[in-house]
Amino acid sequence: SISLHKRLPHSPTATPMLLAVYSAPALHAGRLHVVLGGSVLPHPAKADKGGEDAFLFDDKRCLFGVADGVGGSAKNGVDPGAFSREMLERCHQAAACGVADALPDALRLASECPLSGGGGSSTLVLGQLEEGTSTLRLLNLGDSGAMVLRPAMREVSGTDAKQLWPRVVLRTQEQTHGWNWPYQTRARTFDAVGKEVDEVSTAVREGDIVLAASDGVFDNLFEDALQFLVAERLDALRDPDPLAAQAAADALAQNIAAQAKAIGGMRDLKTPFSEAAQEEGRSHKGGKVDDVAVVCGVVRSGARPPLRLGHNFGGAPCVSEERPVVTHSGAFVPPGERTRDAAPAVGERTRDA
Image 1 (cartoon, rainbow, N blue to C red):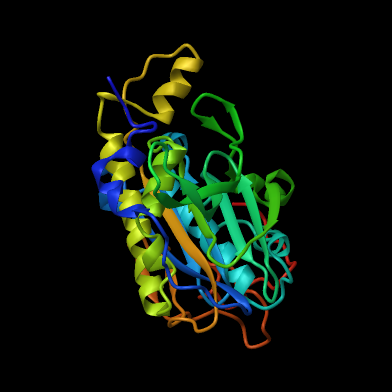
Image 2: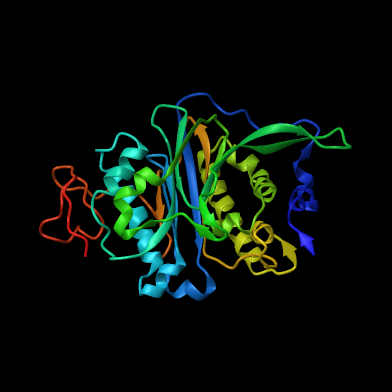
C-alpha cells in the first residue's frame, strides 16, 4: 500500500521550493493581525443539507473557529449540522457584541442561553489573536484541532539548497473517549462547555501560519502533508500586497479541504485514521469519507486587506462584510432569538425545551 506519510514533501512539485538563497520579501514590523480564509466541503451523502461541519473566520476580530456536528445524534432526529452551525454562530455573536473581553469570556457568554435546536452534539475549536498583543488563544474540545506553523530555513539533505519550511510550533491535542469517539458538547450541557475545553495560548510572530480544521482533515492528512501544502503557499502568504496574502489564505484552505476530501475516498494508502484504527486493533484501510472544514490564516502587520466575515451559518459558505447583530442597548442577541418580541438579555436563562 501507499503511505501519504513523508510522501508529499518529496514529490516533484516540491522542487520550486528548493533554493540556494531564499529571497522572499521581508515582512514589516508593527501591530499584528491575521489574514484569514476558509473552506467547507460536505460529506457526499449530506451535501443536500450543507453537511455537518461549520466554519467561521472574522478578520476584524482575528477570530476563527470550526465545529463538527457529531453524526450519531442524527439517529434522534436531530440535524448535527444545524447544531454545529448555530453553536458556532452563537460563539461569534458573543465575541462580536462588545461585552466579552477575551475568548473564554465569549464562550461563557455564548453558553448562557440554551441552543434553540433542542438537541445535537458537536466538537469545537475556537482561536483568536488578542487585540494589540502577540497572544494567540485557542479553545478546543474533541477531535477537531488547531496548529501554528512557523516558517524557518532548513537544509535539504544531500544538496546545498535550502528550503523555507513551516515547522510546527503548536498543535492542540485531541480529546477522545476511544477510537473515533470524541469529546463533544451537547445541547443540554452547552452551559458547561467552558469547563470542558482545553485552553492553550502561545506568542505568535509575523509570518506564522494558523490552521484550524475538523477531523475530516486530520483523519486524512498527516502532519507533514499539511506542512507541504502550507509550504507551497508561503511566498504568496508573505507577499507585501495584503490582497495577495488574502487570496493565498483562501487558496490554502481550499487546497487542504480538497486534498482531505480526495484522500478520504481512497483505500490504497495509509492515513492517520487507518493507523489509529490499527492501534486500537480495528481494521480500516485508507481514508475516511467525512465532512471537511478548515480555516487558514497568516499573521501579518501593516496594511490589511478588506475585512471579511466568512461562515456557513445558513448552510452554504458565505464570505461578506461583517454585520454584527446587537440590540439597541448593545446586549448580546442569541441566534434563534432575534425575531422574538422579548429576546433574553445577557445572563438571562430560559427553560430547556
